[in-house]
Length: 346
Ligand SMILES: [Zn+2]
Ligand SMILES: [Zn+2]
Image (tube, rainbow, N blue to C red; front, side):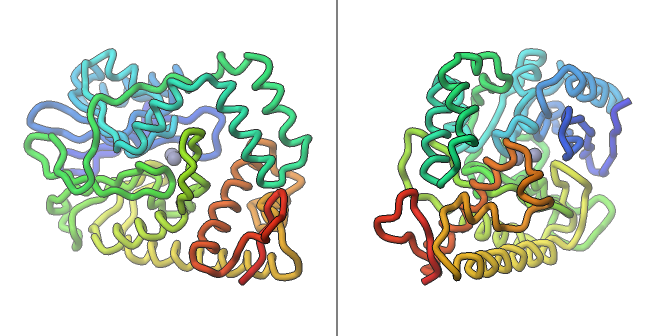
């Protein structure tokens, strides 16, 4: 049986499992409106997850066929994976921020080979050793990639405009753009009194932006068609301050559990990243390092030798995002003429 939690005031959450993932589940939120139920996120595209979603909706006295709209916090497959199936079953609209719609469009339009070639080039530039890039190059050349799941995510039919109230009759739900984890991540602010009278400013559906016990992955935005030098960690830190200032009575994230005192959690995360940035400068002090070398020396949840292949790629992307931030802040710089590029403190 799907675990359903009634949060009061026409808001419920359904635990939709993510197969083989330490996160465990996505909390899909169900919002009653005068036109019928709307979903915030849908869950991973897997038969077990689909069953959990449909059973959860049944336990709430509705069905997937009655869903009128789907709001997606960001394009990741644990949030957007089942959107196509929900739309197919119900005719519901799907809404997402334009920046993440672009990611979806790119994923659908680019052949996987192009993606693998882009990733391999990026890793080479970050100083990754050849054995790390070999599987990507093999995948690029084999055509096997075509059978990978998640390569045809649903193209949303509506865009979420930051600052606007969403088209949900009888509700006041406002979109807050919170880029960082992805370029188009949004939090959704329910501007209604808390049903249990908790003090604060409504409730915040925070997606992956603000979670009670984990920090979301912040890497570089990956776009083979765009050479803009973005600063995702800078975006993320700004977005954190933005949701902290909202001071919601309660936060309903897409993983883990609900919590209160968002400003305190925001402060913790800002401190964590400041400590991390300062720590990285210490690692760069003895000699300039490539992003790969920096990732090897950074602190992770286990020793580098035990980090599996895919997670190393993610770790390097995270190291790059931190380097990007340090460069933007003028606290580090690329060493002129280094190839692959190395970084030193300023
Ligand atoms: Zn995510
Ligand atoms: Zn997630």
